[in-house]
Length: 496
Image 1 (cartoon, helix red, strand yellow):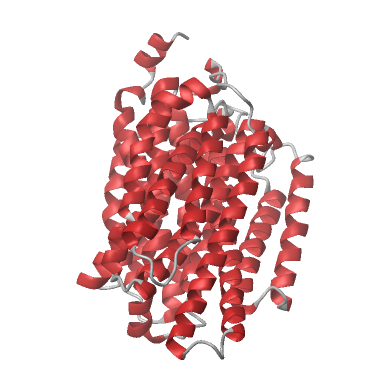
Image 2 (cartoon, rainbow, N blue to C red):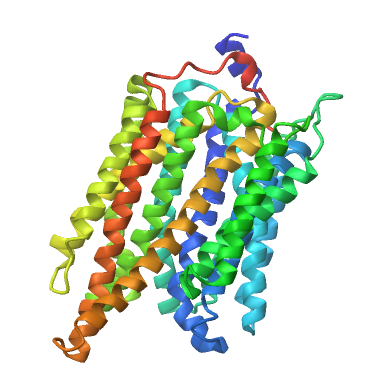
């Protein structure tokens, strides 16, 4: 089929940009929800009344459900139809958000956050796979994935700003209620714009139950193990048990995928070099990005004495830098150079940003200390997300689009969870060590400030190291040159 005939017969092609808007709204909601609640936590804690030790579960419950169920959610979309799963995910996310906003107890709030993660695991891969199967023209595909990747990059920063505004002027509960303003219009848009693709007889694969159980359990144990290490230490029996269980279950999952007729994650999806390198780069940036949000938020509020709204505004230059790179990378650079040099450049820029942050001190200013690193980090993330998201789904078999898209979200979410837990543990250890070594030479207030500062710089140095290692491995995995476009049969005319 020629491009011209494909354009005229593809019902998605005529309204593809409206579909992109709907998918972008859903993507923004899922990404910003990972950070918007952070700003609201102190107010929620004062209102409902829960301990400092318990408050991490408001964040962890979402991450556990979302990260562990993404692959299963992606495959469910492949099996029963992505339009249906996308709409179910949107409405379920809205319902869970309403429950959380109305929560009168800590238990209800945690349950609501977990339900958000469950429906997010249906929603996120369905959105990306719909994008994959809607945009089949290579030039337009790069533009669409540039926009989608940009939303993934700026969503966390938007969440911090929006959370600060809602918490300060309305209530912490609106950090959850606001999702209804995203989800319900997006669900109506999806219902009217998207088609229900149908499998031909005999084409519908079966759900790989053993694979679903092992990978869900393995990812759950992995995220839980790192989260537990953050609060109870790496030597805690539960931390060790969970991390060992995650290795055993994920190895078992890999072995199962070689043997079953309809694997949950066909190994052809991840063994492609460009796809594997893209997944790794997204996970690496996720680890560094979540570290930036966490530690810079504390630094700007506690050391620079910025308010929640000022802190959210302080992240905006990074968002502007990401958006500035979207058009350039997706439409000009990626078609000309391919993903390898662009992803390598992006991870190198992110590393430089971390090194800049590692130079911060208690007497640094936002303009000269924080701002340059944020702008450079934004440029780096723009390079990586625009290139990696498009490459990770390029040429994928239509029947694998859901699970292949889920891998993008899985690597970002798991990378962010691991990065946050690892860097938080290193931060706490550095603070304790510095306070112990300098207890006799510094006063109480100065000791606390300098100890925290030492923890921040330690975390930034480690984040730089993670980005370097991830950048080198990703670059070695990615193939040089511009990937060949998918054959005509690899991109269906109707998205499920």
